[in-house]
Image 1 (tube, helix red, strand yellow):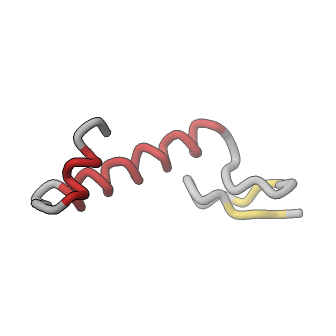
Image 2: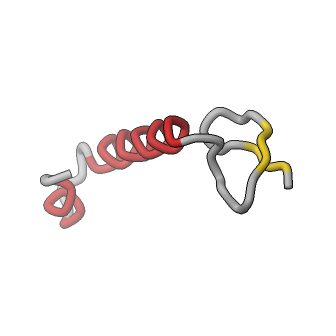
Length: 54
């Protein structure tokens, strides 16, 4: 079955995978981590305490 990679957007043969390779998966995870850090950067609530070790 053809799928579209969530990392790079290229079409690839998939058996349920969401990424065409581990590099795209790792890159996507890095982007998500950056988004979380940015989202809680100026947060004075409890979520800042949770993100300190992140």
